[in-house]
Length: 233
Ligand code: C5P
Image 1 (cartoon, helix red, strand yellow):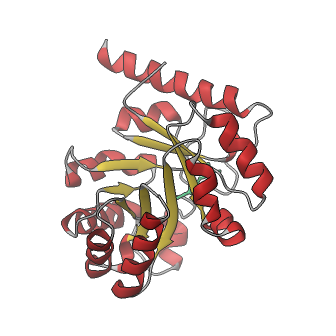
Image 2 (cartoon, rainbow, N blue to C red; image 1 turned 120 degrees about the vertical axis):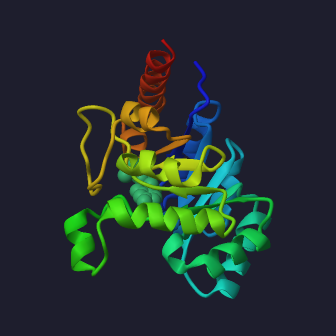
């Protein structure tokens, strides 16, 4: 069962054995494996090497620092074999373009607003509502040379309007119908994310904490294929 929408499974674990077990089980099933702060902090760049044996690696570093530092970190992730690396769009255009220039072999993806933040929390932080801030950050990111945007499913349509068809739109906070939200505030179902125009879905715990991660991933893929075939019908 194939679609043009890719699924990245987030290997959020500090346990090397668990990471290898999941990566091995998901080889040929996940299009992309994402290693993030938990695995990278606990295991170092070895987490990238281990995941890369099974699938292309998305290195979710969420970099946010001065341009020189972010550029060097993006280049280091590329040297370790990452294919994608994230930066926070709120780090600004100079930071994002420095990362894109320093690591031309990887796709720099700009995180707009974390899917764990809702509008009430954004207001507490002194920020505008996601509906306003996300498209603004997305436009800045693409102008600065980012290859894609990470945003919540509800923002995909507005982001697409701003960034056009060429940019990759990545959606985390995906929950199959009936699944627990965990700490995510702005979740969508796989079907809703795909209907809105996402290119890549990031799914963590609904797969990695399932009794059978491969079966859980296949269920999500089936939901995507169904969404696609309804669109085409
Ligand atoms: O387990 P769950 O499906 O919630 O995992 C989502 C993954 O996507 C986590 O690795 C998290 O760091 C990442 N992510 C997110 N929201 C963003 C950007 C990345 O949840 N805006």
